[in-house]
Image (cartoon, rainbow over all chains, first blue to last red; front, side, top):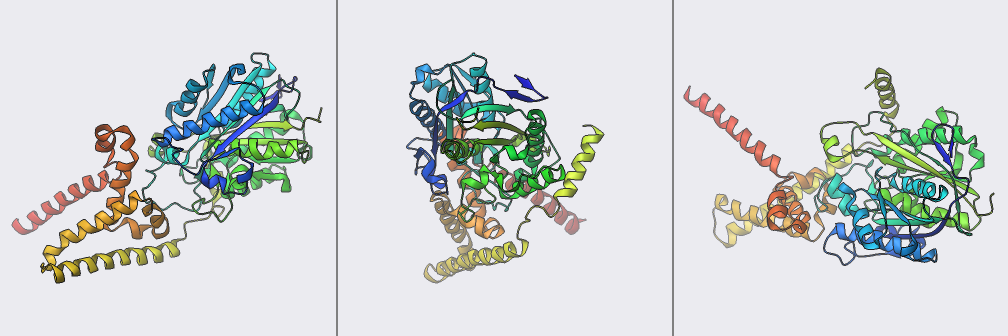
Length: 337
Length: 152
């Protein structure tokens, strides 16, 4: 149900029935390492290529989500999935394995919440009983598509991000337990002229703040209604910028505001730079960490604002600026009506 | 693009100034000097070995010295060490011949999954290619200038 200008409210309150997360070694040694379902120390996961490894991560996360929800893959009506690789090879090939009808989506690192929003819409409109929202990224496949070969020695600036190796999946349906999904605010494409692909945090911050402001406007909620608000992957450079931009619009998020790219790694982990990025970053942190806190009763309501930089290698080489997008989803603890 | 968006972009670029950490210029320069210098010192050492133990002239020892540096760099790239060294050393790892070797080896490694011809063959010079193209073009113009100066 549309409320305001760009927000959906889901009256039937679809639930996250089960989540699955699979990550690589670097993520496994991060502060949230113990919360992920599967941690793989081999970047190849025993496969011949990094692309196949990413696919395997996604398949494992999907299987885990379905299994934890207590259903089987055959019960899944639609899989809504995306990744960072051209033509969505990870998502599409994983859908070949799981064998269920598939909607492939792309909004770069904002794919995770777009998948959750669309899955919740499918369930809420009774177009599906169970929808599987998932996304993946792999450091080495992303390096190859967006930057240089993995082993190429190029010095990265401190504003760079580290693409998360991992996959996150959530089974969404009308069950009796699990966090509920109340709102989804879909973002506009915002481009405030950042050109350098090394400055994603600064590029995406305006998109995140635009979506947060739109969400508060559409729902009529205020900041205090939320226990926690997390952006996707603005990381240590983009996060303070977003905070400042919000303050200028008189939205003070205080200490309830953080970022999945910051939460993913320790600040002193080698080669992390400003923090994590990649479509798996927001998915893994949300599904493994943030939703767990909701379930544990620590929080009642959270907002996850996944942020995505919609550039391609070609657009960057043609000196285009970076358009960005952010999609927000409100999760609530079961007890909140 | 609308004028309004153009103005917002200008304002935001202004706002960003000083809000992003810049590259540590001084530290990078020192490290590049140390790493690049050490690489060259290593090269000099290898050349001396060829001169002393294989009785080569200094000029003759040049080519095998470069070959050994290239091999060391390729090996370190394959072992996954060179990119870590580069993050520390910056330009110090990029400028000597070892950087060139790393550019070719890393691209070849990256594309080996697509096979020898369309993978390694067509992608090996993806990063190093421009160096060769503009090296040849520059050599042509320098040669032309030399010819004009000496013969006209």
